[in-house]
Length: 185
Image 1: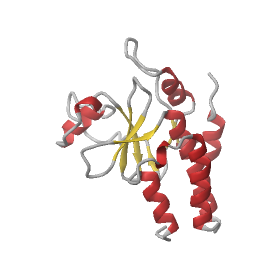
Image 2: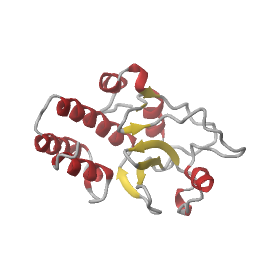
Image 3: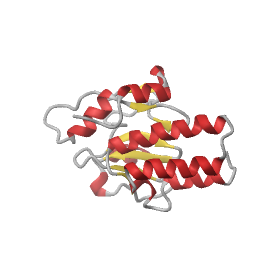
Image 4: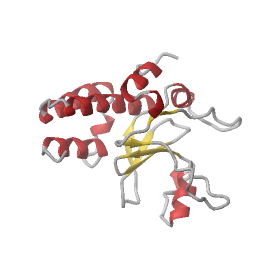
């Protein structure tokens, strides 16, 4: 399979120690093969913006699976939409819980304090592409590049790859870029 995002791209953006790789799926599960290949070969970053590592010291109860949305929501006493109960937790993008529907390969966000989810990316490749581009934006911001220029560049580059991240005005990407443009960083 050919992808627009490579392991080298991810490591160049986040460094070797801040990339988390997913294991291959257990036999018998229905999983989007492109998503699984990307998660196990390219990985996900672990940074201030996107948190993908679980806390190993967190004392989980027996039967609690922190990698599955339904189990996590039940554990914390949140209502979980039935169709999303088997989705995989990928991490947190700012304050939104990010999940993968393993069958379709689509990536969804559960905004903080919300009971519903929004489609955030058409697939895992789009999520990874966006995270790498956002890391470039962060570096340029630290080097005093104009925030409005950075936001416009991000919208253009990511939107050309996949317009889904900006389709919902309440998506975490739109909210973050608005904060950047308003000088809240």
